[in-house]
Image (tube, rainbow, N blue to C red; front, side, top):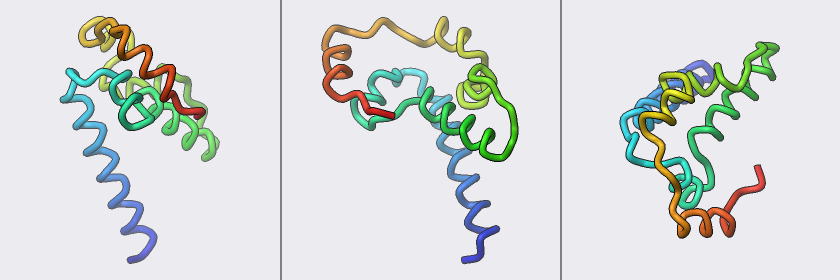
Amino acid sequence: MDDQTRIELEAAAFRRLVNHLRERTDVQNIDMMNLAGFCRNCLSNWYRDAAEEKGIDMDKESSREIVYGMPYSEWKAKHQTEASDAQKTAFDVNKPAH
């Protein structure tokens, strides 16, 4: 496979992941962190890091809007619930170092 095709496939997979996460508003970031070690915020940070590696200045809110499909504050107000004590405890045990 040539590099351009690989990049196009990776981009398509990324778009599909982002669309899936936008649709699954029932899945909380803390659940993703506890199970997979990353969440929507991590993904948006990685996107911003990649932009900055290419010399593109991007702030946290802009990268989050790309992942969430709306301003982060709006997503939180619409979809984020208070984490349970069990979720918080699991996060303290499992939180990644990234």
